[in-house]
Every structure is written in C-alpha cells, then in structure tokens.
Image 1 (cartoon, rainbow, N blue to C red):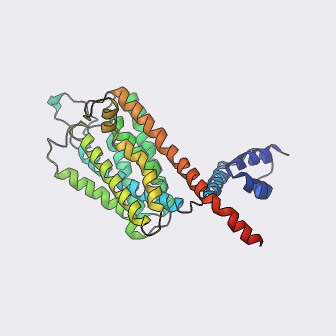
Image 2: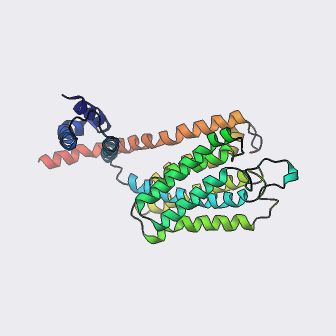
Image 3: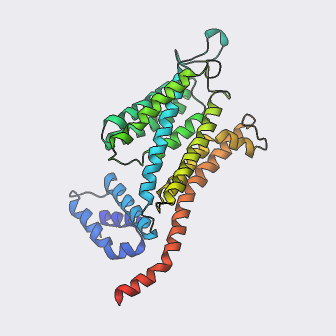
Length: 325
C-alpha cells in the first residue's frame, strides 16, 4: 500500500464503519485513478470532499434527512440578521464623538469596524447579484475581516468594536456559510433589503441614543433585542413547520442557538456573574460565558443526531426482515 493510498484510507474514517467496509476500496481506488503520478498527499479539495461525504453518510444513517434543509434555513436567517446589524453599525461608525470629548477614533469613523461592516454590506450585495459560489466567498471574506479587526487594532493602536459585538457577527457568518448555492431571486435579495433596513433604522435614531461608540446604551440593547427576535422567529418557524411534518425548522433553531447566545452575551454573562443587570458583567464572566456558549451550542447538534439515530434504529430490523422474506 502506498503512502497516498494509506492517507486516503485514513480520511475514510469520516464514513460509518459499514459504509467503509462495503465501498471503502472503491472510493479510494477512484481517487487514486485521478491522482497525478508521484503525488504523496491527498489534495485539500479531495480531503474536504471525503470529509463532507462522510458527514453526509453519517447524517443519512441517523435518518435526519431534513438536517441539510435545516442548515440552509438557519443560514438564510443568520445572513439576514448579520447584514441588518452591519447596516446599523455602519451608521454608528459614521458618528464619531466631537474632538473635545477625548474619545479615540479611526479618522472620520468611530473605529476600524467600518471595514468589517462594509464587508458585510458587500456580502449582502453579492448574495443579491452573484451565483452561490461567489456569495459564499463574500460571506467568508466578511467573517475573516471581522476576525482580523482584533489583531489589526492591536497593531495599529486604533479602536475597534468590542468583542461582544464582533463575536455574534462571526457566529452568524459561520452559520451563513451553509446557504444553498441555488436560491430564488426573492430570497437572494432579502439580506440586501435587511442591510438597507438596518441603515434606515439606525439613521432614524437620535444621535444621543445611537452615537459616539459601542456603549451600553447602543450596542447592548440592540444585540439583546436582536437575540430575542431571532430566537422567536426560529421557534415560530420550527413549530409551524413541525405541524406540517417538516422538521427542518427544529434543526435551524438548534443551529442558531450559538449565534443567539452570542447576541445575548451581556445579559447571560450578567446572570452568570450573579447580577441580573447586563451592565454589571465583568470581563471574566463575559469570557467564560462566551466559551460555554461556543462549546455547548455546537455540541448539541451531534447529540441531537445521535438521539435521532437511536430513535430511528428500532424500525430497521422490521424493514430488513420484510426485504429478505
């Protein structure tokens, strides 16, 4: 067995054991036939393809055929929320404090955040105007730029939005990467409409309510109210679709729990800190709460898949018996 063949077989660990035994050699043989002479490692594209195929087979084994539609529904809601927030934050960035107030700024803007919010507005436009591959790349770029604000601020000494603003935006962006490549025009334009709506709502706010910087009287209420709204929409969709025998809404609600938790980081951290007020949470409580949300939220999905598979398993012997007889 060559090194390349051995490495392909290692990647097959992503597939269920029964599937590997039945088709593992065939799958690896196909990749080896397509490999260039002398290659020793699988290409990144091959590795991603194998891992994605393995995940798909494991999901099918649980009977959760509605998971992928649920991911796509969650992605649509996440991108809608992220672009609406980006529109609001863009207006905030255009309202720096007067020079006499002594607050730091990034030139004519409140902070470096203007770069990230412009990236999210670009992602909304890309969703409306370009094919799926390009709008996913635009969302990925917006996520990377948002993350890059932290080291950029440290290197330049310029202010940036606080982490409790950046973290939910990154969480929403990661979920939004699961959007379907093929969408009707009515769905493709909704993020752009949400971004424009965010710009309009923030522009209508008095400057003394929505100005100067990301303070308790600006960002925290906006994020808290957004968390409530997203959770309410997700739950209503889950219940409404479930009544029609469609469970993708439940998967979407489960996937959105992590970004919703990050949107509500301040009130959750305040509760964890022993004080119900969102303004009382200290840095340690915020960091611990964010870590817990980041660990528990994604862990719920495989738990739900395992429960779904266990519930579906008892019916398998009956079907097998009928097929044999």
